[in-house]
Length: 375
Image 1 (cartoon, rainbow, N blue to C red):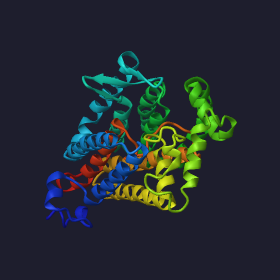
Image 2 (tube, rainbow, N blue to C red):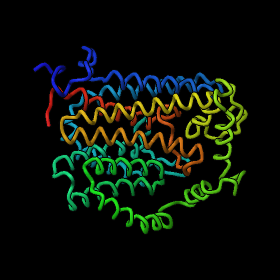
Image 3 (cartoon, rainbow, N blue to C red):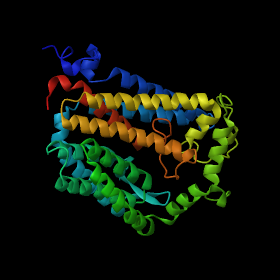
Image 4 (cartoon, rainbow, N blue to C red):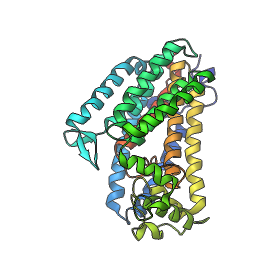
């Protein structure tokens, strides 16, 4: 049977180039739109710095090469390598407190020659792959012993990331693991039970794991005006920038909050405020529309997967990307506490961009390798 006309391939015709490189055209186009928009916004956020744009373009090129490489890996090979990748990621996380590089009050990076890697970013890929491989080989919906084992697989890396401390990445890793379990058919009685059990766990997390500055962020989120020149300054200035953009914005390069240095971290965590001020509500809607289209495409790919492993993995990657976007936009607009997450493919960054592109590569591998493997 012709793989393109088979039921698994129905609804999307692959070009010869896509078949050779295992790329998904619609998803690739959406990624290109996001990266182009990101470079345009970054140029303004970096005070018209071509050097910053060039540096980010190089990082995006490296990440795009990583996407293509990951897309060539058949899902069945990912499944075989999943335990080894997860184990290696755990080892690097354990090594961070001993050989890691400190920066910004946290020890999160490991030096490998001329480059620094962030093991917690690697875990955002290793965890969903390993958990999907584990659950796909068992009875679904998962039974209690498998749920307990899954929770251990999630809790171990999340705890190691949280103590670095890196609360934002820990939240994303936990969300990734939860989505895999949820898509596996988690029953509502377990969800309700976990919700009840989470109440004392959150209290313990607040008192014994969260750092003072992290607790301060939560309190500032609840009442930013309590310290308008201190902890609440970031949120207040970001909200001013977003509100002043109006419907159509002040125009590219014309944002006052950013260019007059009122807006902190404007190239990284708070770049959304720069976009909202200069491009307005219209620009924000366009960005959110592209993000939602990426998520929708990813979920469609998950629905077309040929086996449980591909379905769980593609679905978890797609939903985690949604959480990534939601958390950053929510924290910049004052709807969520500040947790230090960049805006996907818009913020200036390195390791996070590579991780995101690797996730997109996984989606493309699940979709384009369907004609050569079965569940």
